[in-house]
Image (cartoon, rainbow, N blue to C red; front, side, top):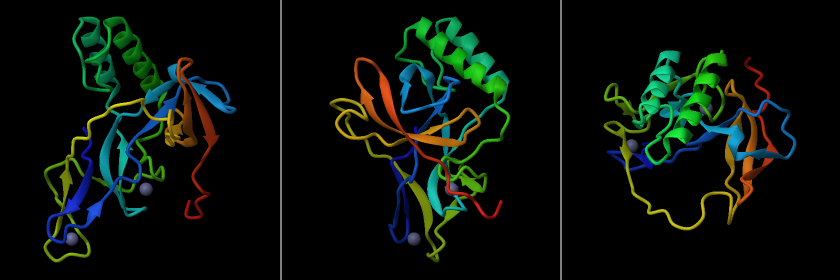
Length: 201
Ligand SMILES: [Zn+2]
Ligand SMILES: [Zn+2]
């Protein structure tokens, strides 16, 4: 589980995630203005410090193919898995279908893991014990995770206000923003979005 945010243990500056989640579009068609929920896969992520953006962000967590094959074997035996996605609340058939979709995605994925803030790979993991991330502006400060439990009630994202969740193609390239969810039909409205052209490349 991602921390709620990070804080410096000396000056108590707070570092909020600029991006903390995203979805792959696996429908295979050209997206116009809508996507179906069934054509989305939640991206497995790890928290990072993006050195390019100088923010707390997340990077795709892509384990070797073997991990996906193992996960499918486990859910087929009726056990839940945590990776590539938590299947605890799902029926076995739904869990098999979902983990199967992740396995098929992993088999075609070519590009190395990218951050979800800028699509680059210039980052430091924040979910490892060492090295601690030093707060650049502080003599003694280190950046530590903070977990806050927010009880969730009411409808999910995209119902009462736009969700604004980033949508990526299967290679981790930003292609859009999920805004409104049509409940019942499980259709998301999508606005086109891509990274600004990068003159450094
Ligand atoms: Zn500090
Ligand atoms: Zn970045």
